[in-house]
Image 1 (cartoon, rainbow, N blue to C red):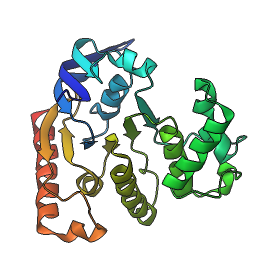
Image 2: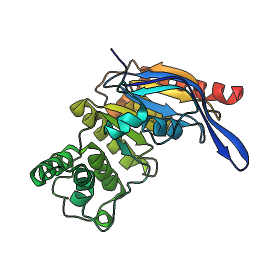
Image 3: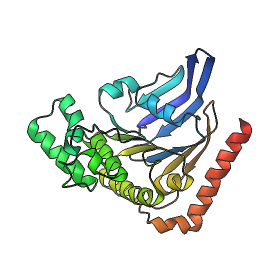
Image 4: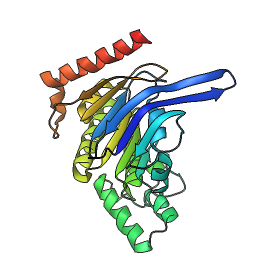
Length: 258
């Protein structure tokens, strides 16, 4: 089966006034349809940069990258992915429904179709009844759920998530982790998820990509043996602790090799 995302020997160097910055080096990775893949590593290791390359927002300076069997730029024009950023990024002058409708308006969907998609995506993220509320009337966790609904509204097969829960407290984060797993199970989408949290990466993922400090390299790829259905208390299991230990060792090895 052709991977949904396929990177081979990917390099990316930024040219700045202070000289070259090597963001990614020799990154090779295949991601299959329906996988939940988390990227973890120290700040500045290229996790977000890799996501932006997949999104066609950055252009690699070496290697190859294919998304849905085409160039990342072609996949972007084909609207192959939804993107959820660290901040919810909701327009304060638009209602929650209006924020979710924005990409649908840009894409030219009919009024009936926009209404249907807004209603269905709000139900998916457990925000039914909040369509006419404004972002400032919602908690931070609810705003992030609205941001996820917006990314889901046009039904792209890939969801790119750049540390969407990093600013939330642990209780809210746990709940959203559970909800995200349930959402992934219902939609079957391919998830690429950036995080700095080892427990979050292990809990959510079918595959964990451990990255080293800049220039960002992959120091380990861990295929998770955990079942697809995961209650929060699985974090106390021996299997979970062993995977978390391997992630920690991979991070340590990457730091020592840098």
